[in-house]
Length: 288
Ligand SMILES: Cc1cc2nc3c(=O)[nH]c(=O)nc-3n(C[C@H](O)[C@H](O)[C@H](O)COP(=O)(O)OP(=O)(O)OC[C@H]3O[C@@H](n4cnc5c(N)ncnc54)[C@H](O)[C@@H]3O)c2cc1C
Image 1: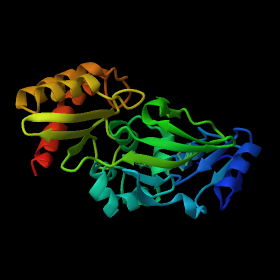
Image 2: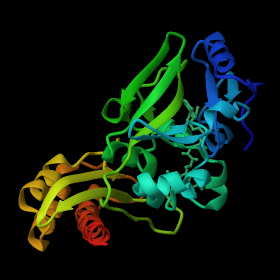
Image 3: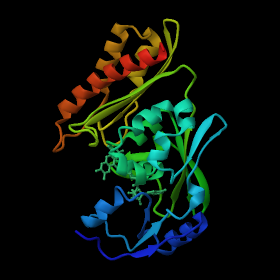
C-alpha cells in the first residue's frame, strides 16, 4: 500500500517545526523514526495533510546527565540508548528494555520520543517512564511544559500532548546505586510486541526492601503502576513469600482487554507470572 498524498517539510530547528505544526492547525503529523507512523500511513489509517520531519534537527538528539536525571533528546535513536555508557551506568533498566524493542533495524531508526509519543500500550519505553516516575518536556506555541509520566498516557495510542506540541525531551531519574532491576516480558516471537511486560526496580537494605517499583505493558490501555504490590514488598521485604504475595496482588490490580493476541484472563495471569520472574531476577541483580 502507498500512503495518501501529504506535504513534506524538513525543518532544521524546533522553532521552525513548531511554526509548521501551527500552520496546519492540528492536521500535520510529526515524523521521527517512522517505524510506527509509516505503517499507519501505508495502511491509510492516518491521513495527515503534512509530515513535519524532525530528522534534520540535530539539537533533538543527545543523552546527558543533569540534576540527578538522565535526559534524552526526543530524536535519540533506540540503538544509541542501547549502547550508551551513561544509560548503562545510571538507568540500566532502560537498556534492558531497549534490547526488547523490535529488531535491530527498527531500533536503528526508532526514537525514544517517537515511542513515548506513540503510546502503544505494549511498548517498553512508556512502561519504563512510568516505573521510574520520569517526565517529558513538551514544547508548543505557548512555550515549554513538563509532563509527568502519570499525566501523559491517557488511553490506547493517546497522550496528553496537543497536536501542535513536540515532545522535546525525556527525563528519567538516575536509579539508586545498587538497585536491582529487570524487564520481563512474554512475546510469541522474538522482536514482537510483548503480550505483557513488567518493569521492576528494587532497592534493598539488609532484609528490608526500601523501594519497589513495578509497572506493566500490555495489561491495559496505558502502563499500570502496581502500587499495592510494591507496598507488600516495602512492608514485608523480598522473601519468597513476599514476592509470591506481590505477584498475586499484581494480577489482581490489572484490568486488561482481550484482543486477537490474548484473552483478558491470560494477560492477567501473565502479569502475575512475569511480576514474580522480574522480582526474582531483580533481587539477584541487587545481590550482585
Ligand atoms: C516490526 C516492528 C516491531 C516493533 N516492535 C516493537 C516492540 O517490540 N516494542 C516497542 O516499543 N516498539 C516496537 N516497534 C515500534 C518502534 O519502537 C517505533 O520506533 C516506535 O514506536 C515509534 O518511534 P519512531 O521514532 O519510529 O516514531 P514515528 O513512527 O515516526 O512516530 C510515531 C508517532 O509518534 C509521533 N511522534 C514522533 N515523535 C514525536 C515527538 N518528538 N513529539 C510528538 N510526537 C511525536 C508521530 O507523529 C507518530 O504519531 C516496532 C515496530 C515495527 C515496525
